[in-house]
Image 1 (tube, one colour):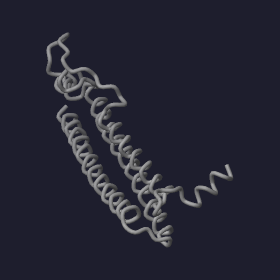
Image 2 (cartoon, helix red, strand yellow):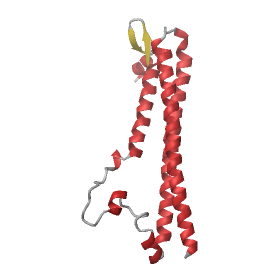
Image 3 (cartoon, rainbow, N blue to C red):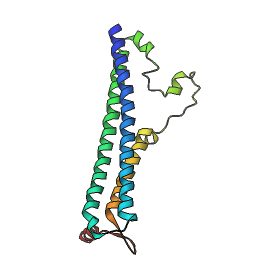
Image 4 (tube, rainbow, N blue to C red):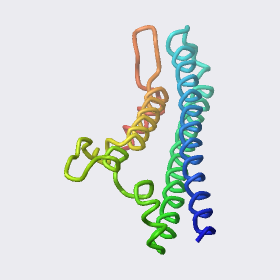
Length: 174
């Protein structure tokens, strides 16, 4: 029984550290993407546009899209690892009634406020899946991808912003 306690404690600690790593990676990639998109916008739209910037612009925009895709994969993998650790700890705890009673609050599907409240007195409402912090994070990543595509598609001129030549040809083909 002591061995099961140690395994569960280890899995809970791993889940906690994975959650911390999830947000550290998220903050780093958010800062990196924000800095790169800000510098790109400044360089390609606010400074004097030159016609030879097209290849540099494509490289930077495709690099930004690549960073966003890597960011999305890191978040998916981190979320999955966290879920695996918690589910493994739950399955070990459910195998023994005494251990299950000991870890019933920390390994339940309840929100933290529901776990400490009295029964039938629910103050915290369940947040819809698509408004959870992880999903909001995915929406931010999708927004960055859209911003990179907008930077790639449009080109500044003295008369305003127009669509890049390669996109005009692409639209004509379609």
